[in-house]
Length: 487
Image (cartoon, rainbow, N blue to C red; front, side, top):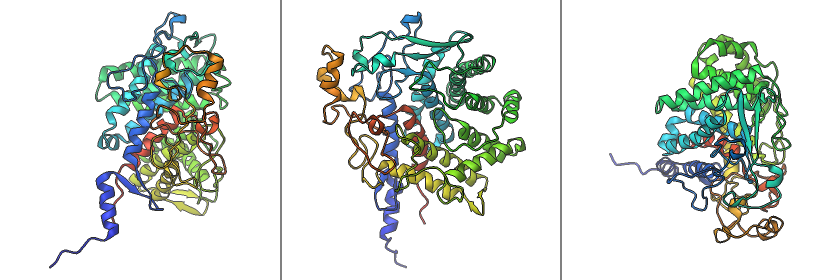
């Protein structure tokens, strides 16, 4: 019997599996593995402190090596959150928590893509900093740098000359949301490291417990990071988030009691650095699927979150652009798209694993609906959109060239120039030319609610990157590197 010649579709599918590509509906091919690698490279570009020898961003150098000096502390390290050079504790901790969650859930996918080690290194860059910031009992250093002075000067972090003041929370000046988010980051990260560095994981977990205790015993919101990172949602969500991660890391009934007694009785439609309820619900739903009936409320609220976000649901209410991108508000909007993609990927996998569905009124949705929506959001970001362009720097067709980012926009040839702050904006910020240094992998703020985009450095609502946009994308992209079944 002769061999049957494979169809063109079969050959494309076979190549997709071989090369790590997934074929999308309109015929464009996206290398999710490449996008995953580049999304992690961006996080390396955001590192502060003494850079390691294997650093992959050639135009970055050591920076802010005296951070913490004003408080007689060593606060060198950590991440700059976006296009400026301030280190904010709340978004940095959320970045690390979500990276750790990705490493836990998509460990095998990250390993297959050759990015597990880089993900672990990205997490550790944050947790090493948090161990320094939380080295004193009932005190946490939560910010380094003065945003007002930062925004008066367009300068690389390597060349900053102005002071780097330090903000802290303590018994008299509490900041429950930041302490609890840092606790969540350390608890989640302890799970990542327990198999590869048990003593380090133990240190992280002990510090997470201490910070949760501090957050609960000295409750109060911290407004010191306003107007840039005001916690409009309060701190109850961060306390639940921290307790959920501590329970996941320890199985301690104390944390179990907290998350069951403090269950949220409301539906929340978004997941971001300020609002964690949907993340708590998805995280704890796994315990319900595994037989934990006390977690039923979290599963019900997770379903409600899905129903409010899924376009086919009769309860859908999350705003979207005409082309189908989640759009909640201008300014770093793609964090909402990557956040939904991330949670839908995790929950879709749980539904598939436990053979469950989501009931939305008279409609039922299984894992395929959730995973398809997660994929659609990431595909939009990578190029399947009305602009026909990628919103990840250095990836795909017509990617952005003018990311709102100090380091990327100043040529290395000018790195040692004397900086005149007022003139720095004329010299580098206001030039309508591509950045001389590619901010590889940065997912920018993205288009407006009509799918329009301006690739201009000074249009920060469109062009500013943020660490937490990318940290949420890591899990969603890792999921997509898993080859689709060939039918």
